Length: 261
Ligand SMILES: [Cu+2]
Image 1 (tube, rainbow, N blue to C red):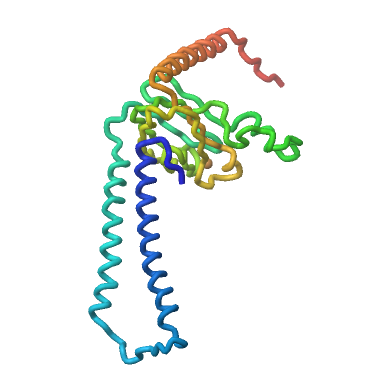
Image 2: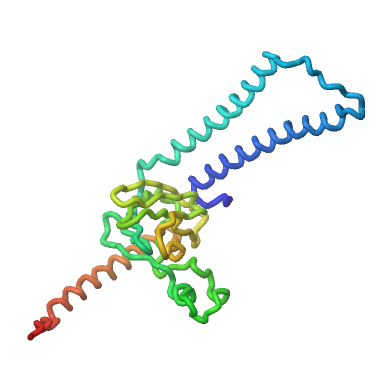
């Protein structure tokens, strides 16, 4: 389990490790007592089973109370963290993610920036049946995309996750984020990438969604807020240019001849 690079992932990791060490402690006590009994209370040492003891209220209360205390002790921090990581208030950037068969659409809410992210070209070529390309020669095989999602570090980002066809799930282990993309629903999740942890983070669709489920990876590039602002500006300009171009094309294109006969 990765410790991850977000506030969310670190809390989940901490919770996981707490549960892990509690289990280790319980195992040590249980197996310790069992091993001690096996060694020092065996028949060859003259031990005789006490067949008259069939009930002991005090012992039963103890072995009921101890697990209850342990479970409540683990449930309290778990509930506290669940509430904390589901707090989507005061997000500084909203991104709508729409899953489809087979890729992701990213829309930066409040800006015209919107694009589709699909499996990288080299991986896509190599994965074809009888492509003749050895996947080992493709860097980050099946884990690259044409247009990665770009997010600023140190910024609370809220994702609004949905789908247009079947259920997908957007998952980036290093972020501690995994949210189902369900048609007709908008699921929310938020996270903040540590300011000192820019980089490229990879994930996958994690809800079996059909034939090409394995071929719709997630790639997120976390950059400094200044770099992000510059990138967003550039994307906005490009998007505008694209709109102008298609408008121009539409006005200059000769009308398609009606089929005759
Ligand atoms: Cu999917």
